[in-house]
Length: 316
Image (cartoon, rainbow, N blue to C red; front, side, top):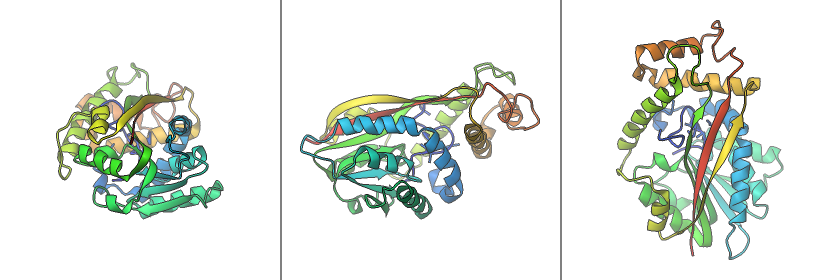
């Protein structure tokens, strides 16, 4: 299990990565391909760029989590599970100035980036990295006052068991924060001028089918309702609030965000564009054609709008 920013459409963004890594779990970001076959190191620049674009959203979430700090005292240890390149790890370290924050991921290349980012931001003495694959390595994570898992839980077949394992890591008064769900990311107007209107909604629908297949194929997969409050309660925790956070980059987007959107759609085309009907596949090709006046490369109305929902539970 890896990363916040799954490139492409995250399952969290509207049933059907975000995140996409937002990502793009980006969150590594989120097409949201089978994570076991992704080259996270190759995707690192895109994951980092997506997470940086969405930093205001994640910073707001981190500040809110700081307001839920354990009643037993200061937060001393934070686990950022599925940390990816460490953009959110650094934000958590800034929001919890007395804490050691541990970036947990299965990719050594991404953990190296998390290390570099922490050092560059003057947080190196409080940020640690831990290579771990879940659910197998839960016993290596150690205890924590806050467990933050963004777009990573849905890569574990038995989500209820995973939440119970996370709950077992919490110190008394500690909080688990699950960033799962939200809204589908939107980049284009409903009538994008190429093909039939509503293109992104149809992409979301195909992604939802893909996501169901991905979930069903996971080890120990359970067909369970994504009722996060119920999962937290079932793990012996007391739900302590749910909030959604907006990422809004209006048109005209900066060049860096345009490049992320092009990369996002390029990955969708490589991953599962064959699921789309012929008209929508043609639309995808035209959107990615630099010579097309209404392509993603050139159109002035391109934007980025999404939301992430964070569900919390406290160990009492």
